[in-house]
Length: 354
Image (cartoon, rainbow, N blue to C red; front, top):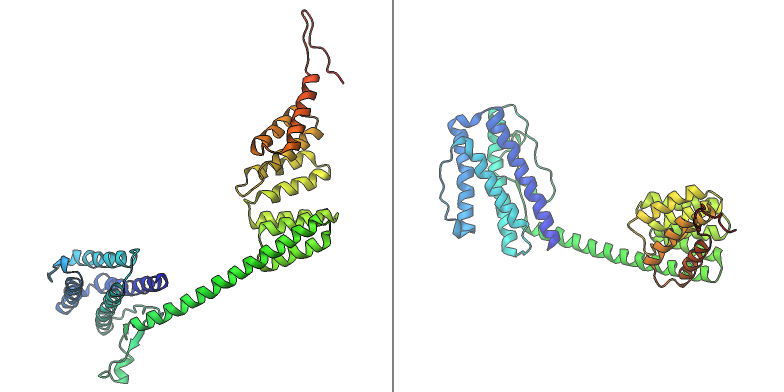
């Protein structure tokens, strides 16, 4: 039903857009509405829409009235707005679809008459609507010579609407099924890759991560490929795949964290801290404690033990059950307490213990 509704809304916009172009040419460019035939043409459009709404929506109790020229476009627009709101309603019915198709065809019948009036009386060239679901209706009384100088009568076939909607639904179902199969294969090879990492078979792990990537390229699988390359001592490829992951998903935290780890191992300590900060700010990160732990390691190498303790403590608030982290924080606190300056009366701070 949602597919039918989407198609219906698109065709509605096509019909109203066509009529709007004609009314603009009809009333603004040539001011044809000042003539009797022009006024009758617009009044017919208003009468037809009024009768339509009175028939379809009894509570409107509309009567066809003569609308002043400055206001008739507003009247038409109010009809359009109401039909658009009906199409967009969450609940649907076959009656609603039939009613909307009827309104669209009402617009095409009036557009047919207005367009041919414009062709007969002006040199204006108004663009026809795009041929999506709509078709051109044959008019038996029109000769071939006359047809070449006339606008066609378009109409929307409700049966064709449902037929195309059903085709789209089948296609969408097939696409959803294929997507599910890709997801399953992706997860399967991802799990196999992790299994081989645990077995220290890094070549086979890398091969399975590549297979997962063939089904779906994500920042996750690119970062795992980077990890497998790093375990094979190919740090250049590891960094390259982390950067690919960042380009694909700027909010995937592990890619920043792992890149920081790789350059930290190369001795780029201060530069690694910048990447750990980026990892902390990324929205998509399951193990958010890792960049804090790695930043703590970097500060230890810089001998900034106070900042290292801050980083490790923050990591501990995120992962309170991390036993090794508890031990690291306790040892670092103990070391800092031992080296804390002491004061005696009349003397300055004593030197730090070695």
